[in-house]
Length: 244
Image (cartoon, rainbow, N blue to C red; front, side):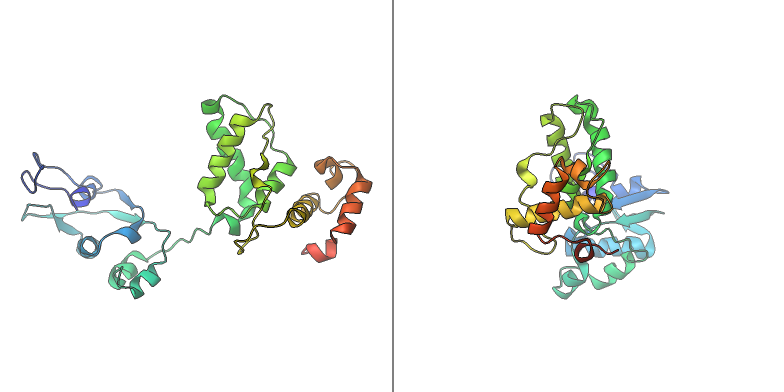
């Protein structure tokens, strides 16, 4: 409460001087409340008052302060479920839910992975001291075949770790992603299933061109005949595995 709304000197043990809270500091500006779903019920009441009346009192003060603040709140919890468990106030939820923005997990928007990977490479190249100039289609396919239970933080950590271990200007992803996880399934795939998913991803990136320049065989560094043989064995067909 002191962090958000401030306190007066002597308001509690250790309050040796008055302090402004985050809302007072954010007056005429914007305050971002992360993990709003973890806010204790007592503080939820005080936050609701700020949102409704634009006013609050510091701890240890009877003076009411007025603020004009834009509030952005975020959470990874399901607040509607928290409401049903009496862990989150329904009136506060509707007061916050004026303009909701949903950010789906990485496993549901894998088309963003190439852009995110490039962003993290640029972010860490000066810190790690390894300037990565290329992320191959095979690497991108590996990243897309993984389910990312740790979401973007896991991708960021993997990119940083791979930059440290890569010995050339091309990003190299280690064997930690071999056992890929299927979306919505917590069971580890078999090596054959992982191989099949990997080949399908590369074929899709190559628009189902198998041989020749830019084909899947070139990206996989395989002989086209070998790739055709693997496709036959793994029952890979464009019409079974493509939306086209």
